[in-house]
Length: 300
Image (cartoon, rainbow, N blue to C red):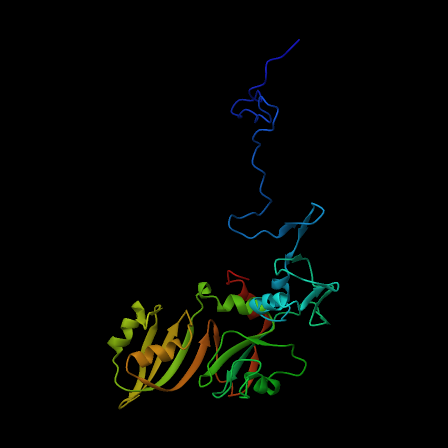
């Protein structure tokens, strides 16, 4: 006895089961695979296929090394390209390698320690220091000052963003490369506030036009909140708050307006203020404030 093929489940409102084979016996379409719990469209997967066909879970090695304070994620990727990162004595060839932890990972022949708790310091950078670990020209760097400014035993710190040679004020430093990266991303929209001592003529009305953005030499700068604080003749203090932080943005904009900048000081980065920290000194941000701030960032 033969039975007619089933065209449905027999339950009202339920679609027919998919046909898994056609007239040639080849498999047909199947139901789409179910998404794992918590799946959100657009999110990167933390799974990848292993050589044996199974799946691995974890984070990219570049992210883990950045989180451990080895370097920024971009710098870690460069280290991997140069063959400086190994896993169990085998050279890591791609920053997309997924790991649950850093056990067995070494950089330049040194084993990487587990990630320490995130620490963040507010450092009052003096003018005349390069925001870099070393300078080919032999000029002093922020690390020359940080050695005396940070408590003994502080792990390696990396700067969040940069202040150029002649700019002073608030520079945040952290041992967490992922936090650094997230705070630097333009998409994070973190406001930075500067005070500039200028020489020249400017009006508040002209400064307020910067809120619409401005283009200089083919470079477009976004909205800037600028205010004339006080003036004595042609000497004026201007406060500017911006979110992009492009290279030398404040100086370029003010010079484009016909002002000569004689001093530039950053006073705030996001919720963190320079306050009354003495020049060349640093103060640690309480852990609870760091974690509260981290939750507001999209990239961490």
